[in-house]
Amino acid sequence: MADKSSDLSETFISSDRADAWQREKQRRQDSSGAATEVLLKLANLRTGDRVLEVAAGTGDQALIISRSVGPSGQVVAVDISANMLSHAAEAAREEGLANIETRVMNAEKLEFETNSFDAVICRMALMLFPNPTTALAEMYRVVKPLRNVAVMVWSTAEKNPFHGLPLQVVRNVGKMPTSPIRQPGMFALSGTGVLEGVYRQAGFSDVEIHTSPLRRKYSSLQETIRSLKGSHAILHDHMAKLSEADQARAWEQIEQGMSSFVGPNGFDAPGEVLIGVGTK
Image 1 (cartoon, one colour):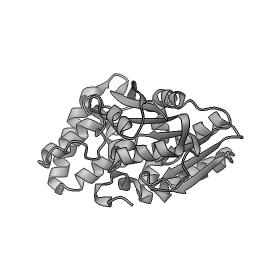
Image 2 (cartoon, one colour):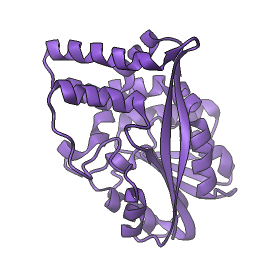
Image 3 (tube, rainbow, N blue to C red):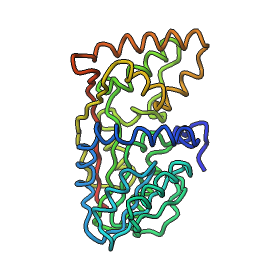
Image 4 (spheres, rainbow, N blue to C red):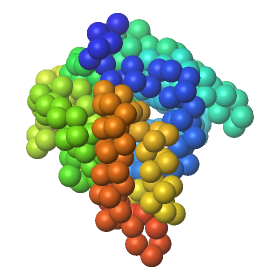
């Protein structure tokens, strides 16, 4: 098990965080559904494939993968959070999908045989691991030769103001130092060439990095702030380091900053993700 103090994936382990993540399921689909389609296309899924999803969370993507590989295929959804996976297992039962298996597991030590999966997918998690190269090397190990490992991570903070702006406000208010390069964080793999470099260090020689836009929309500024307060786990962890007075000041500044994305149709902010794919 990785050092919990440096593993931001630990932030999502509690039942409260898992429940909050589940409540945002439809919002994730609305904002990043098109990017997820690109991710799955690059994974090159085929009917009958056995697919590993790393950091599967509450299982919304596992359901899509399950339908892609069909009843003759299999999806093994792993996550460090048993609470997250309980939602995934329940969703699979409700959908009548019998080809999804859930297992609690650390991404940096995958408990599977070498060359045992036809594809490996990891969405919005690689940048949170203490050692992303180790995690990606494990994905490389368990995927079959000539098959793909596809991941999605956040692009830069500047291109993702819904998450980047609040985090910057909290750092400014709390006079927190800028995170060291390559320290786990939402934007840790967003720099030019960084994700490609991690792929190559993990053993891949055939690597492509794609960008995909997304939009984050809410009916009003008030709904936007409620969502941030209820589901932005990493922001909560940063906020907890501030005094009550500084927290109130931070939320005031966040609301002020977010107001610039409010128009006649409500809140609408741009976003961008990076999608990497490598062939073994």
